[in-house]
Structures are given as structure tokens and as C-alpha cells.
Amino acid sequence: MTCPLAAVNERTLLTAAPKLGAASQATGLAVRNGTNVLHQLLRLRQEALRCQSLTQRKYFTSMMLPCRRWFGRKSADESAVDVLMTFWRRAYSLYNLRTRQTYVTEVICVATQNRGSNLSPMPKRLLREPLIEVIWQAQFNDVNAGELLPGVLYTELKKSHPALAMQRLPAADIPAPLLRINPNLQHLTKLRMEEPSGSFIWQVGDRVVSLNCRKPYVGWDAFKLEIERFVKIIEESGLVTAPARHSLRYLDLFMSDDPPDLSALNLKLTLGDYGLDHYNLSMRVEIPDGEFIHNVQISTPAKADLPGGQLTGTLVDMETVPRVPPDCWDSVCAQLEALHSKSKGLFFHHVLSKQALEKLEPEY
Image 1 (spheres, helix red, strand yellow):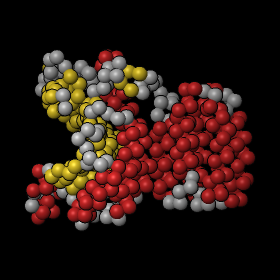
Image 2: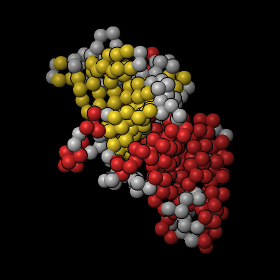
Image 3: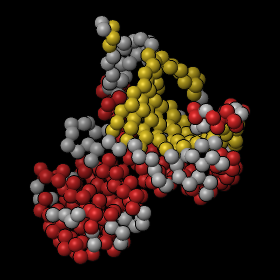
Image 4: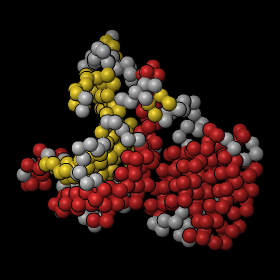
């Protein structure tokens, strides 16, 4: 039904196109085959992203429309397919093959997240938000970038954030020879930039940059936009050729009247006859999840210094990292939505207990 991905040309494309369109329409007549329609849509998109010719990619776009019309009649699928089509429009004009393939990974992650499973829908927001900080971080191997990058970032960020102030961090006083020989110190941030009344914090070190969002969280759309602006400044500086690693990290603090307490989490730990739900605990686990890896750390009791004072509870620190490092800054931006989707899915479907979710007053 579909032509081989490795050998798509104009002739095979024109031959296969009517068959693909007819198959999509036929499949769309049966509600029970909704998953097949989505797979057909993703298959068309995978083939399109492999085409070097913009004209060929546009042909595949037209073949996706019957699938889109079928899904458009079903409210439960509209958001996933809207995301799919949005990223298609962003991806089909990209020339770089690796970048287009990154978009494929991202869209498959978002569009198929809840299909074929018994997972409950995820809330759009929590009225009693446990989130205390979100961090996007990128690491790189350009040795000399750390000397010039802070000045470039400060100058550019100052244009849109007039009250921006820079502050030296303790790591800035560590001798340079010690930083070079100790791998554990190479990714420490040395400088911090922030606005007194703003939510964002920009940090930079010799081989690392990060963007933090403090409580109250501004929401994913606003945070993602700020990440993309930050990435654009770094890329246009020409100081960092490509990141070696990037991640999205969420820190949630669940307060309790009697810590330590794991009741907010979907986690049961025992050691022989001992239940560990109310014992002091610090643990770390690495969870593979398709094209990504989750690094989850849980500590109880834990203390967090916030603008309103110091709070004590159970801290859940979740970092999501792509398995394959990005090869350019475009790939970083292409992976952001998938990082967010995977992190959100892990939190609501696996980490948070149903009882705790109800107490956080979710909105759907």
C-alpha cells in the first residue's frame, strides 16, 4: 500500500498517492478502525519527511487530508491531530533530513499518547499546583564558549527584559584548572540573570545554559516560547555549534501534615515486613520511555526555600532526556513538545496517586 521509505521518487509518489488517499477514506468509514487511520496518517507523514523535494512532500500532505477530516468529526481526537498537523506544517519545508525525522518522533509521541490504552485523560491545569520550579537545560562541549557567552546573552536578553540583573554564583570562584580536570564540575552554572519581579531565571556556565521558571508557573506555552527565544540567541551567537544534551526537569513539592509521607505518590515500598511509606527516604530511578529517559528522584522529608518561606514535604524531581542527542539547535526546539508530553504523561499517569490528584483540584 505504501512505497518504500528509502526510495521515494516523483513517479512512485504519483502512483501511490491515489491508493493511499482511497485507503484513508475507506478506513475512515469504520469507527473501530480509528487507530489504523492514525497510523496511516503517521505513515504518510514519515514518508513525506524523507522526501528531499518540497513538491513531493506537499503531495503527501494532500494525502493526509482524508484522515484529518475523519478525525475532525471526533472531539476526543481533535487536539492530538491538530498538534500533528501543526508540526507537519512546521516540518515539511525543512531541508535537513535529521531535523525532519526529529519531528516525526515528536509527533508520534504526542498524537498516540493515550490511544489504545486505558489511561485517564490528563488535566489541563491544577488549581492547587505542587510545582515549584521547571528547568530546561542544555549542555555543550565548546570549550571557549563559556567565556564569551554570558556577555552575549546578557546584552540580548536585556533588550526584552530591561530590569535584568546579573549575579555571580559560588561556582564562578572555582579555579579554572580544577573545572577542566573534574568532569563533575564542568556543567555547573557560574552566572545567574533575572528580573526582580519576573518568573524566569537564565543561568550560564562554561559548558551549560539553563532557563528556570519559578513559582508561580507561567504555563507550558509561555515557557516553551521563552526557551525558543533563548535557543535563538545562543544559536545566532555562533559560540555553540550544537548541544551535547538537553533536558526538561520538573520539581514538585507535596506538603504533608506529618512528613515523611509518600501517600501523594503511586509508590509502595517495603523492606521485608517494614512498610517504608513514613520513613525518611531518598531514591533515584532511571525509567526508559521510548525515545526518552526519565530520571526520577524522590526525597522525603525535603525542604524548599520559596518566596513565601520555607516549606517541607515530599519532593519529586523528574528530568526527561532524549536518548539520541540533538545534532543542531533546530532539533532541540523540535523535541520540546515531546519532552513536555512525556513528562506530563509520567507525572499524571504513573507518579501521582488518584487521591492526591483529586486534592489538587484538576481542571480538564
